[in-house]
Length: 377
Length: 221
Image 1 (cartoon, rainbow over the protein chains, first blue to last red):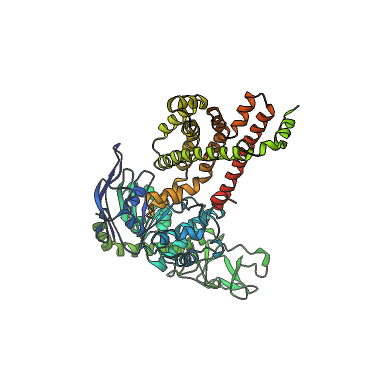
Image 2 (tube, chains in turn green, orange; image 1 turned 45 degrees about the vertical axis):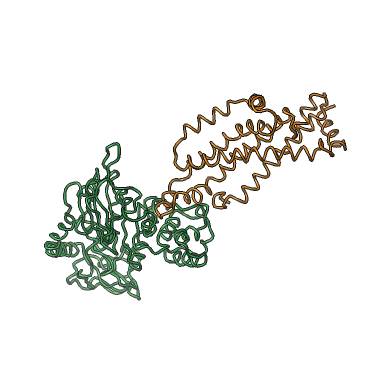
C-alpha cells in the first residue's frame, strides 16, 4: 500500500503545489488523481517516485519511507508512463520495452523474450518489434509506453495523463485495454488525469483535487457521483452526473416484455400489457429488423429503425436508457449475446428501475459512507 | 592562362609528387594538423557542451565565450602566439583550436538542450542514472546536430590550417605561401585546389560517420 501522509510541496517562490495531502492508495487497484490544472495531481504522483521531493510529510510504500530508499532502486520498482509515451526514438520498439530489464542486468535474450511477451499483452503486433517509434501511431506508441513500464513486472505503476494526447476513439481503446491488463495483472496503479470521465471509468478510488493542491473528495466513483462532497466537486463532475451515475447500475433487473415482438410477416399481436402503437419485427433468427406501426402488417418497407440494442446484465442502466432515448418509438430493444431479441422495455419502465436502483443505493451507501469518510479524513 | 590550366599544370608536374615538398607529404601534414586541432577542440568543446546542455545551465556563458572566440582573428592570434612562445606546432594549434571550439561547443550545447524532454523524463522516472540518461538517451538523439558542429569546425580548421605555413611549418599552405612569394600562381592554385579537395573529403567523411553512427530511428529512414 502507498500511504501519502500530510504531504506538502512548496516551491522556493512560495507557490504551494500540494497542501497537506493525505491519501491511502489501496493495493491491486486503480487510484485516480483528478482535478483541474494546477491542482497538484502530477506533483503528487511525481513525489511517489521522488521525481519531486516533498517539502513536508512522508510517503510510505509498504510501510517504508520512500525517502529512505536509494532513488534509482525506488524508481526501478515502479513503472512510469507519461503523456506522449516519451519513447526513445533511437531504439527499436523491442529495445524500448526492454530498457528497465536491461538496466537490471537481464541478458539480451531474456529481455527480448520479455519484450515480445509484453507486446502481445498490450495488443501490439509482433511485427512492430523491429520498428522505430516514429513509424508508430500515437495510440501504438502509448501502448509501447505501457509495455515498457510493465517490463520488469513492478508492483506499482505510475501513470501521468497517459492517454491525454490521443484522439477519443483511440483513448477509449487504451482505457479498455488498461482495465483488461489490470484484470490480468492486478497492479497498484496511480493514474493522473484531468478528465473526470476517464477517472470515473478507470478508478476504483478517485481523489478529486482542487487548486492549491488540496483534497476535495476521495471516494469510489459511484459514491462521487451520488454524493459530491461540495459544490466544487459537483461542478467538476459536470451537469449530467445523474445520467453518468447510471453506468454503475446494472440493467439485469429491468422487466422486459415480449408482447410487442413479432416475427416478420406475422399479424399484429393483441394489445396486452405493452401498450405501444408499435411492434418490433424480428427476422427468422429472432434478430431485430425494426419497428412497425400497428395495422401496417406486411408492409416491410415502412419499418422504423430500432436504434442500438442493449444487453441486459452486461450493459448498465445508462446504456438501456440511452437506447430508449435514441429509439424513435421510445422503447429500448434488449438482445442476448447472439443479437437475438429477448424483449423490449419502455422509457417509463427504465425510469422506474432507476428510481428503485437509487433507493437501493441510498440504503447500501448509508453505513459505507461513514467508513469512507474515516479513510479520507 | 586560366585557373584550370594552372590546375592542370600543377598536378601534371611530376616534381610535385615526390619528396618533402610533394603533394602526398604536404597533404598528410595538413591532415595531421587538422586532425590534431579538431581532437583538441572536441576534447574541450564536447564535454562542456554535453554537460551544460544536459543541465540546461550556463547557456549565456557559452554564448559569451563563443562570440568572443569568434571575434579573434586567426592570423593575428598566430602571430601573437609565435611572438609569445616561439615557433613550433603549439602556436599553430592555438588559433585553430580557438576557431574550432565555438561551433562544437554551441551546437553540442544546443543539440543536447533541445532534446525532447519527454523521453528524458521517462528515463529518469524509470531509474536511469544521469550519466546514462546523457549518453544513452540524449546523445543518440542529439548526434546529428553534434556531428554538424564537429563538421563545420573541421571544415574551418582544414581551410585555416594553411596559416601553419606562415610560421615555417608544412601543410598545403606551403604551396600557397611559397607560390605567392615566388609569383608561381600555378603553385598557389594547386595548393588551394588541394585544400578544397580536403574539405570535400572531410564532408564525405562526416556524412559516412553520420550514416553509421546515427540510429535509423533518429534519421527517420
